[in-house]
Length: 100
Image (cartoon, rainbow, N blue to C red; front, side, top):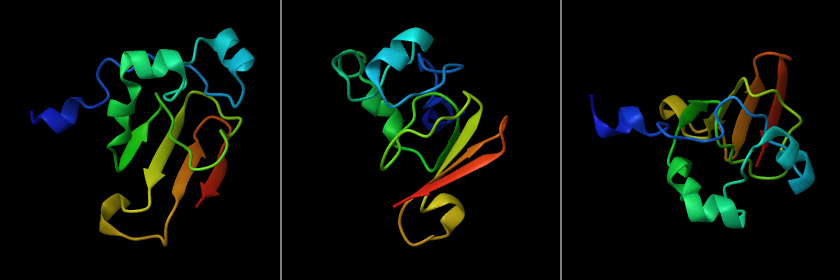
């Protein structure tokens, strides 16, 4: 397997819902990528992606109120250019967020 196949290995946020505010993340155990703890853990290493399932979220605006079971797609997913932005789809709640 190529190194790229293991980009999400070791992501501490797998199975934890991301929330907008720190006190909400403390309840779930989610660590925001650009918080002090997230920076100490090097969570920005998960930012190089085209699409991923769950784990550390990188929304362009606020964090949607999603379950941990979501897909995040960048604007260049699959070689398409959607005109800038990030799509997030909650697979449990069947919700969609698009930000640019």
